[in-house]
Length: 254
Image (tube, rainbow, N blue to C red; front, side):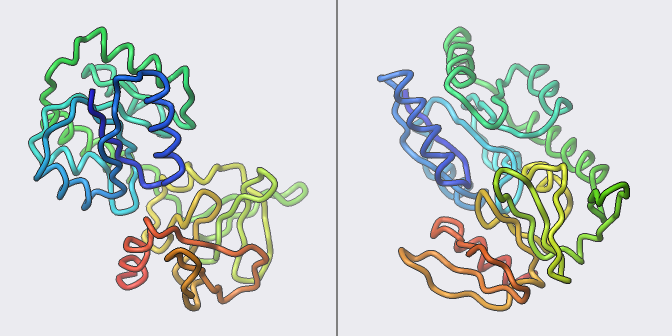
């Protein structure tokens, strides 16, 4: 059984591939794709696979755009941090899903469901068109121009344009504003990514950075990039070599 994974976080993709092949020794991950653009190019030239595991929110768009553009007929199992409105849509159309963070139990259940269905051919394009419109609608409802932070007995709104970096430190999600103040927040980075924020980029698992905060970029070991910020920040923010093309495109166009 040949598997394709669409996931822009390298470690997440590698972990998923490892779990799949450990659970089924006759499953082979033939390709890992990290962006909408890369997936469109690959699928336009290849169709020798049986099943797709796909993240939804990629660095250059929603994975639904891939399936709307390319006439694929392979079943898709989505790995998603999105909430129940999407999950219900998947259920209604017979496409399975795995909630992030993924684990062996959830992956096994998804594979078993795929096998019970005897790998049916699925016409995904009409569904992807519908779900893409659904996500666009939901995203517009989720637009947030401010983040709420708690300070003693007060709740303070901080505008997105005043935030330099979203980051995780000691398992707590925080923000650094352009006044060099740090505030903890309740949202996870995955939830933050649901906001409409074209001026922000998810550099890696720990950091989402504002374009205005990026002073310049340095070459780092193994073709990675190190971000130099315009505000004091103790941690070093590294962009992986896999994300470098997307980051440079974002840096140029934002």
